[in-house]
Length: 203
Image (cartoon, rainbow, N blue to C red; front, side, top):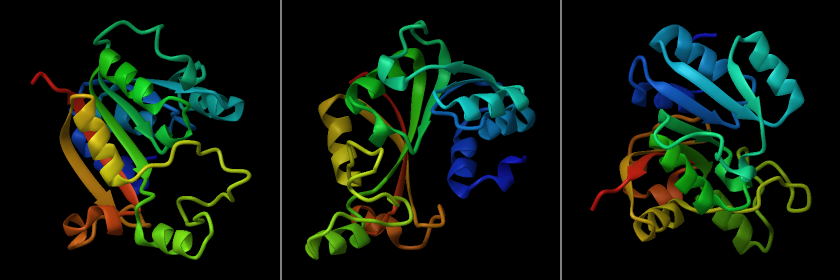
């Protein structure tokens, strides 16, 4: 599969990654993204995945994959082992997101994180009606969701500020994983998906 055939969110991430980089993908799924990066951007990629079926798919894609739980940390990797560490649509499902982010920036020069924005107007409307939100990107009911730490764009900005994390780039997307005109004006209200490129600030 080509990068252009993946969901637009991943195409955006691919644009942020330089050719020939070393990339670690946390929760890499079936490995299709890493395989596309390898073929089109000569990336040296490794994935971490816990699901057995996804691991088999990674092997079928000839992707280097390690079966592990992200919550167990990245102790098997040395500092600055990668140029980029990616975590797409996974941060909300880990037990200690701030620690995971610290670990990402320890082993990689830059981190790329995407997550569903709980501050989106659709979520706010459902909460105002007294119910937990269910949307395209939050499809589970409150009792069977894998998500345990939901956040908003504003929450993530504040986390970065308090932990001295630099925001290199940010993109806010709609339900189709696409940028739309005017969304940057009210990202916390309008974005359904947020995409961040971060590093450990030196200031």
